[in-house]
Image (cartoon, rainbow, N blue to C red; front, side):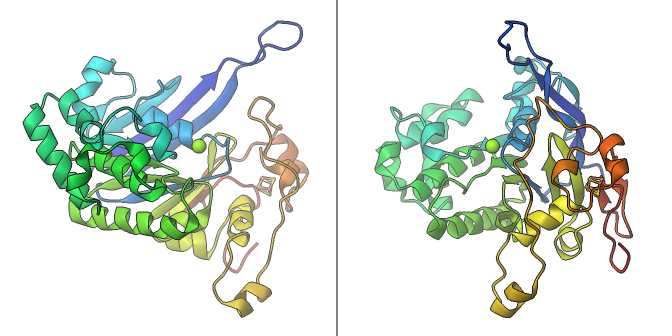
Length: 328
Ligand code: SF4
Ligand code: MG
């Protein structure tokens, strides 16, 4: 079957900052050639440190940002280059949940109004939209009688449930969730992830679930893509990427995830990354990860590795010296 979402060679460049000379700097490639497919009802975890381009990728898919180049094919239509007017009928099936629920909900609007907004944009009547908003409140575990309250009257976890309800108002096929739990208390993060998983099963949604931490998406994702400096450096089925990561950066991210079993926690390899992630304004030559990579060799400093299939099972990694089970 054709994938629900197909992203090809997506690029976003921003104008470089002006230096002290007043001349503009070189353009910054925040997203530098991202490609992936997502099937209906599937979840792709999109993971990486802040500044790696994962949010920018999500925003281009829903067209909150226009791609510099590349294509976004959603449900059989290339939407990456459509005008906002031509995009509107597709946006119904393509929604977004944001990181900070408070700043993404208008503080001067009631919850009824906030949740109804996407329906009103699509031409629903006021009465119908309000009734649907009440149903959506219930669907996300909130009390429909609280429809006339304002966002500040809700806790962070409840406010994010409102953001999720809004994203579901038009019965989307795909929700891009940009770090939907990272602004929430740890104690409510699991509840919101569980809710999203349950909604996915009930409604047959597909998610692109963006996170900076591999542990957050481990339960919900079917596949995972790891980004570094605007590129996907590893992508594959969850079992492969978590069980036998091929890229040194994935290995390092996974080694930072605490294991529940204390013996396993003491025994396991821990990789400490040197330095900070480099700035996309000044990317290293060769492999972008080489200044921090424990396995870097001479070739890595000059030759950029491309995403290639590693081992069996279709997983891909962009590394000259990937780890493969039994071989390294
Ligand atoms: Fe490390 Fe070289 Fe692989 Fe880059 S290509 S991740 S520097 S081993
Ligand atoms: Mg972000």
